[in-house]
Length: 321
Image (tube, rainbow, N blue to C red; front, top):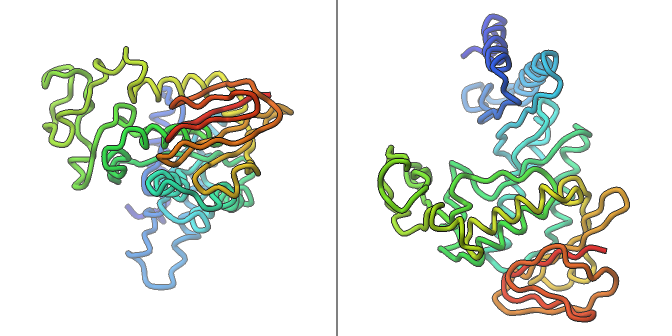
């Protein structure tokens, strides 16, 4: 499409209006930088500015119809480049953070995780003060988190715990909550969801299972309190019921900054505070804490006794005041 054509832009707005009239709550735009693809224009062409202007025009139109419509986009670029697009949307997928979470869990240690995250956020907030982060682990174009972690369920559960305790809106790629495997080519990272154990309806049949023949189905996991599905379900309910996790700010937890095997941070909102600690390692860890001792959430057997927080391998604890 020739995005510089007024007729094309008018038609695109009519497409948006069609779906708005049907009652959608927003739009998820794919590959936003590809409207004016730098690979299709002469070197030196202002494709970034052209893309930004295009999406700002689309945003202005959508918000004029309904200011509450939510606009999310895929901009697969480093934060310092992706941030230029933030003026055209409410939210962008945070690819830098996703890579950071995956690397941290895979390597079992972190280096300045929260500082790096906050520096990335400044890129977006400086351009759009109302920007909302869209967080995730992997998507439909990437190897699935379970495959990246070589099938390690404990690490995959840890990754989910980190995702859901950070700021932003967490997005789940279908099947992550089952522990589905997936490695390129695309067909194998998009295998049908396993609703039941049987290879028949209600399971989709567009592609046969190759990597997920032994993945436990939703039906098999839903009543198992220790399953991957239950971990995701518990995290969704936890976040839904806690405004500090949904809306709060984040800062480093000084107790853990010197220990690369722990990832700790504080979430604050309207004078209320939560302390979150993740053990990234296969070895158990402990630390001495003062202050709040109310356990809001625990995963993997983490506990508190007196002033000592005990963290088994790959465990998580959230402590309130």
